[in-house]
Length: 317
Image (cartoon, rainbow, N blue to C red):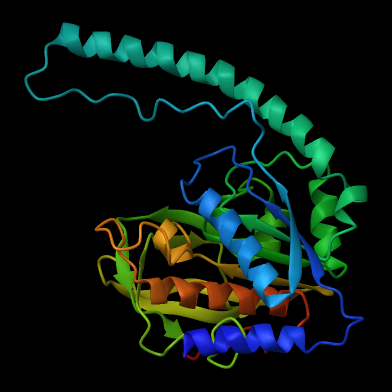
């Protein structure tokens, strides 16, 4: 079913009039916070499904080559039976590592700022039909972040996957555009999301009993009255506490369109060929193909290539 739907989308794209050139997407994979190992896989898949469908072409804003410094993590806690001297030595080692990280991170942020100024000026962004934040994190140092949000409001598409919701937390303009922001997550887990709009291009390819294993986000500043819900859970993904937990949504934003899916932490969610046949895979190739069809449908909708409902507040009490 999923393969047939993906082929139908490709056939529909091929059947478009010759004058309908592919849309242009700018895919951003820059991180100033945690960097997912699945980013390179995401880049490959986004380019592949665009080429296969004919719906869009891609340019990339990759991570600067100088390399993001690695945080030393949380301060050490005293171990059982650890001597005061040994604990103090570990604290001193951590403090030195943190000081070095802070120095390197300040330099890194300046590198990112210059990198984004070169690649994401408003003049350059106007050449694209839409933007994809694929597992971005942190403050992306856009040269004109308000101008970027206004471009979407004026009619561009904005698409984000997974930690695109863990991006630009201090910038309310971005969070309001997206519709919510990452709060936390627990261990990876298998879920069976509820499909709130099975007719939408982003959810039409998904079987009603579809299950996927991934890192499932818990959100804050999410208001179901301001978005069109696509997928969600009626209980906490890990401890099963009753409540609503969104997984994917879309919305109109001025004249623009926004599509977000929180799935996409794992490589095997993105790619049916990643470590195929090994025990490292938790998701079957068919689950990954379903995810790709989910992405393509959402991207096509955001670009205005396929109709779909976007009325906000569609969750039933």
